[in-house]
Length: 249
Image (cartoon, rainbow, N blue to C red; front, side, top):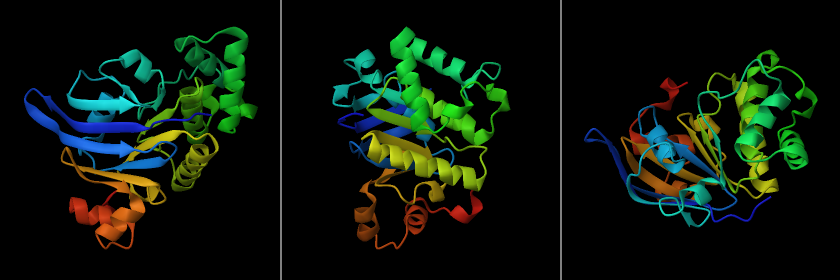
């Protein structure tokens, strides 16, 4: 689908009423790779993603999306991003297809061009057969697939997902993670997947570990495991954050 330059964050800091939420965060989400943003609840993930997607005012530091400075050219940079928020933005009383048409219209796509893009996005997420079902009739997994399809309708270079599996059972959660991994490869899209659950991130290409507003470590996961002499992403995460993931759900 795209040739992307990924995401680059350099020395990013942000405070709420003088209280630091992010401190000098730097990392790269490589183009065409699945990058897991992993951190316990309250680590600063939502603040970071809000800065990346333009929902918060400008922090101190630099953000580049697909090679474009988000502060100098915000519309151009954000136009290359698809976003799936933790909280659903779907209209439950509309059909799946109507939600897609609305999402396309928000991106400036209408008529024949919009229908083509909608059909392609629905096929990518394997929910074409449900297109005339009302959203309230869909199960949780199909609703999240719809959210992702709507984020993909304008064929973005970068897909950002904030805790997208909240409320899903383990099987559905695993299926969704696997499907997005496949999209990363088949569509050459850059994925930044934020979660506090290690089992969602264990197959990631790259890893960013965030804790208490600071990036503890970031890079290709194989290199990080070797650098810290950890056998698994779980042990690496627990070492860097001093947390017990067995208590998380």
